[in-house]
Length: 85
Image (cartoon, rainbow, N blue to C red):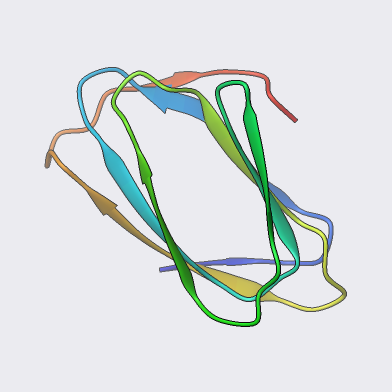
């Protein structure tokens, strides 16, 4: 579980060999995954699957702390930096 302060960005990376699942609790927030940008209202928790190799990032657009619960397909995760936000 991770927290995000207002205006903060998490991610800006990709995982070469593992899918990632993000449960986003709170918002509004923006999830960028590859070329796709999704506005998350934060009214209800939302689950997203990020395929292996897809660059992704999240920005907290709210005025309060929000939370992420993150699950990975692999225990030993290979992460490479990417610049999305």
